[in-house]
Image 1: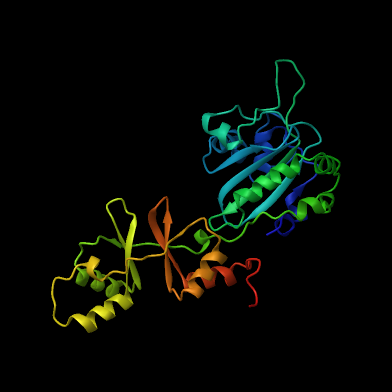
Image 2 (image 1 turned 30 degrees about the horizontal axis):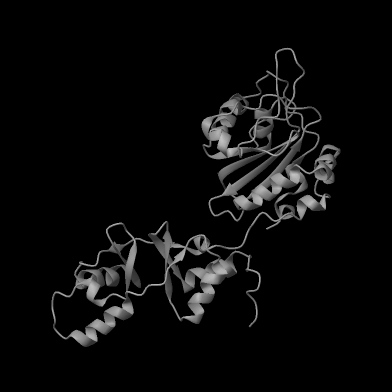
Length: 317
């Protein structure tokens, strides 16, 4: 996903007259009216602009990043869809919030490059980039990092500051060609686990659960929730055919012990390749050694062909 796919002319505010950083962010989010003089409240949405910016500065619902003396990036989580918007002010925008403990880290530890001494001319960023991310966003943190680095380059910065019309911004190919999405990860196709069982659980109880809930496999975990095995529908059928009327069978006696797991940050293409070569219907997914869900053939297909982001090298062969 490139910025050019998300940044249309109607999402570019050039020139942007906002008065301060809080109002600029509110304007880009559609919560303020452009051209409101500094100190003049245009309505209840404008009145909450400072509070909204402070929440983002504290990492609540988003975060702020400094790209350069001229540019900041505002990331807002939980939007209806992925969007990128840009506003360019003819004058520096004062009112960038002071650092907070959480905000320092969210701004990558950079010092605020604007000093606003009493009586000194207002200083602040002129370029404000708003990134709105949906719940299933394809915009990744490494993509945002690439954008921040690009905004700090003299060439892109000067072209943005020199823009006089909205159409000037989409014409900057170095910006619009930047990829915000990374490779698809296992987490993109993860089916969160609803059930986990312990090795000492009677297998009849587990198979009954699987039958009632339509669950094809259940992870067997240890005391620290680390994966020690997996019980599949195939294991249950083999048990039915082999044991006769043998009662009181425990899950550990039936489960498959040699379990191959993947982590949620692995590339999805690699995990899918493993599933194909080893003929696996599902793969347990772990986070810090703890079971968090399954990767299934169906979830992989939905993600690969429903996202429009087929991984490089996935076609053919």
